[in-house]
Amino acid sequence: MEFQVSNKAKVWTTLLMIVGIVFTAIGVVLAIGHGHLGQQFMANFLANSFFFFAIGLSALFFLALQYATETGWYAAVKRVIEAIAGYLPVGIIFMLVALLTLSFMHGGHVYMWMDSDVMSNVKSPKYDELAAGKGAYLNLTFFWIRTVAYLAIYYIFWTGFKKRSRLQDENPGDAVKIHFTNYRKGAVFLVFFAVFSSSSAWDWIMSIDVHWFSTLFGWYIFAGAWCSAMVVMVLLVIYLKKLGYLPKVNESHIHDLGKWTFATSFLWSYLWFSQYMLIWYANIPEETTYYLMRIENYKAVYFGLFFINFAFPMLILMSRDAKRNAGILTFVGLVILTGHWLDVWVMVMGGSMGPLANIGFLEIGMGVLFLGLFIRVILVNLTKAPLTPKNHPFLEESLHHEI
Image (cartoon, rainbow, N blue to C red; front, side, top):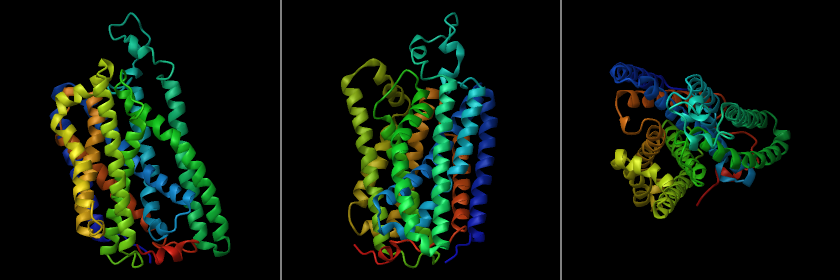
């Protein structure tokens, strides 16, 4: 069945983007007199660019994982996963714009290490000996070599999976051969992703707090992005079912997506607590400063995130029936997605603006603007191929999936 973006969906996504632009403009005007407009704007732009990019990337990871493990149940919802992963090229553009702009701004008070006075000019009052000690890794040349490598690899694998998915639809005689190619390519992608998902998190997010580091940080970022991607998958499947699409997708498919959401929420929570507990218990000043700043300035939000992203889904999604109920999954999913957006916002704004940050017109506006664009891109992606893939070797198994 071919999907068409309804006029109602077009109106709502357009309205979201217009509201986002208006709120962002109001926020910019209000921030002009504060003296840190550029810093606030770019920090928010980076946070939103990364959040939605990470969802697209995590969908690509999940697709590769299904290929590498030769999973059967997912075939009926494969196009949904591909549509979300299809945001990746747009996300790459926004990440490049954000990082290039900050590079030209010498970090824009977001990345302190991009300022040469901080890193190499020992006579400057800005010079930071601790930051300078990380200069072999944190320098613009090496940073951009890594960044281009990350984005190029992601894009290459995405285009490959997309091309082979269409070829499988058109060439039934080569379906099994294409499947095994995806199997091998999926396994190779997971190897790259295992390294790049952590190192890119260090480069793009952790380096904002240039004095601080955590060996769990890359996994923590990955868990939050993966959970957010699973929520988007659940919401998109429910939306399509409501419109009468995906007739072969049953409660068992939705249940499996709900289980993945439940499991990734626990993974994120485990890493949140592990990172916090180990650093807080060790009580090493250069490590605890990360938490002290956020607890002092964002206490309600910071600890509220743990309740939203752990206790909330745990209590509501524990039962089998809840993971099959569209209303419950939608409500919980929207709450979790908001919680993970706030998580990324706190990580970026806490390191770049500290106590000066707050959630106002600019923050809400930019988040809504990116959300509207994100939804529109995904819906358009769904129109580019049949919602049920053709000739997939495990399609028949997926269509009879019952648990």
